[in-house]
Length: 134
Image 1 (cartoon, helix red, strand yellow):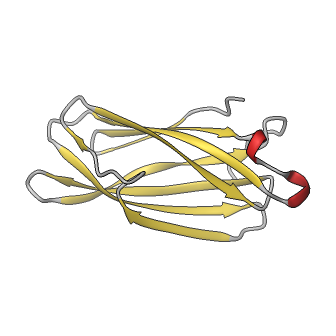
Image 2 (tube, one colour; image 1 turned 180 degrees about the vertical axis):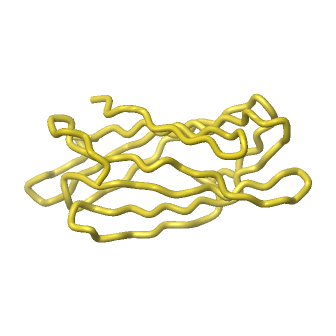
Image 3 (spheres, one colour; image 1 turned 90 degrees about the vertical axis):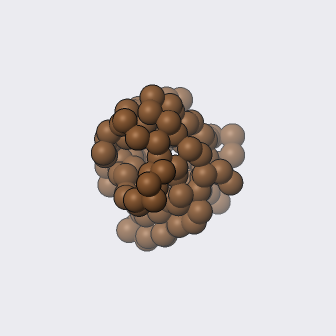
């Protein structure tokens, strides 16, 4: 079930996120809930950039926080020329029926300047529950 689209633009680079509850991979009786999310990064700037690393802050419904960081995304460090976009899918398990994710990507220009672009906060909620940013 489609949960909605979240967007943020930093330095003319737009990040769109579409979360999706993965019922078939979840087991609520065991407090195991899994969401997938599809991210599109669109370079609307006039410079070539490369995604170097990511940072995520994941908070569950009980306020427990997990921070995740690392090189690239899904094993890639894509280069985006002006007008290019890159899309990937990933997932997040939680021990609660809702949560929120937020973060940033570290981008680098071909001139070696590094800067952060925002990943919009997005809510992870069961399809039959009211969507809220926790």
